[in-house]
Length: 328
Image (tube, rainbow, N blue to C red; front, top):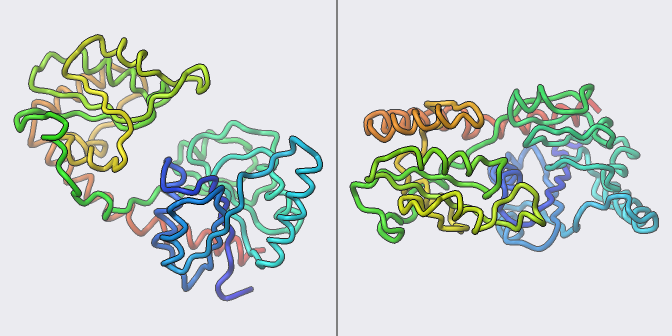
């Protein structure tokens, strides 16, 4: 085996956006290049190319994965993939999203190259090439226990956190119209039902405090094109004219919101059952009335990240990749 095996990463993205891409790029930023030689296959040009190039990590513009919709195109993609994997001497392939039957994965399977898929959410696909992967890397025990295929080996590695990204860049409280005495509760995510923005708004409208502000950041999409999404008009109807609830749309530097919100690291303190608005309202109400509790939970969350979610998941990720390369 090569002392520094070359691992091929199929990203499905060319920029540092979206949860799955952010997790992979956070990992690759700190990966030990003395142990692994990464080759990143990007779906298109993007800002990540220059960043990784400066670190000595190679990127290739590959395009989207080729699914079997057209036989000629699929065969061409298969031979292209076979040539790339052989010429690059790829020792293992990591696929950072769910897939069906892409030619790139078939080429790796034909060459007996270990393929690992990364499940960032519960996977319900059964009849695909996933059953032939060596293992699925799962971001939580819940994802591992509930994902298909049932026979596929599941390995749990938690998402790493780049703590440098959370250093204050700017204080947006004044720019967004918040006074010093305001307590700000924030929602960050896609504006769609699966993210629970409707529950956040319902919770906000149940709380009567006039010194509290509720901040919503994310992208509204056309629900006729993206099922489960909410349009801006949908959002306005849910907000119902409550001036304390503010939608600011897409934010380029999303972590600015973390420095505005008063309850940003509290997720280490409370777990709320999905769609339980009563419980959500009660816990947020408790946090609003207890600044010391907010501070204590925030410090506990930061300490947990430093201890368990900074470098440990990256080392675990490296060790897992090398285990599958060495066992081949």
